[in-house]
Image 1 (spheres, rainbow, N blue to C red):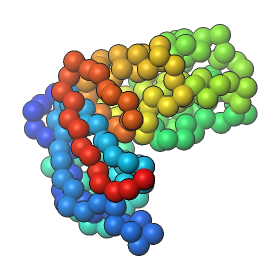
Image 2 (image 1 turned 135 degrees about the vertical axis):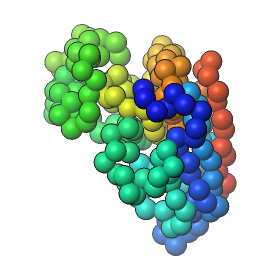
Image 3 (image 1 turned 90 degrees about the vertical axis):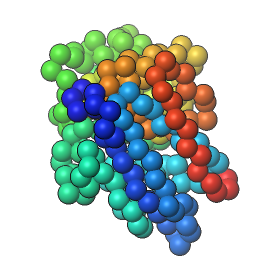
Length: 214
């Protein structure tokens, strides 16, 4: 981690508005995060949680408002900002015809990867050491989720943006992700996530509830 160690807000969301299919999901939304903080987005299905995550990542434009990264609009520093974040969507993005090892190899070519990480070691850490050469389509939903989560071990990123990271995981898998989040935060990282489950960490957890109906 680099600049996230300071107490200056790294991520600043200012007066954000989101409209989908002519429906206003939220407006006037503002918040900020500093190093070591986690923001837990809550709200009913359809209230705009995933839409907000996609806007934060630059995958969808906001109807109004601005997103700042260390005081500068992310739209003016897209490359730098994207290098500093990792986004895991609700869909894992795991290719079923590839093995877990091949999926991570592909990810290592697309993203900025930590130089000190070994792909096979990462799969072992997420509990897939015995399945790294099996076609991913033959694995359970929880195991495919673990493949996606292995990117958190690979990518060198300050900001993690996670859409329902505990989906399909068993109790041990949930505990492992909680531990991973805690370690990232203690190193000065930041997390924005959605989850219907409580998030347990020794670092500050802030909650933001979006309105709307399911």
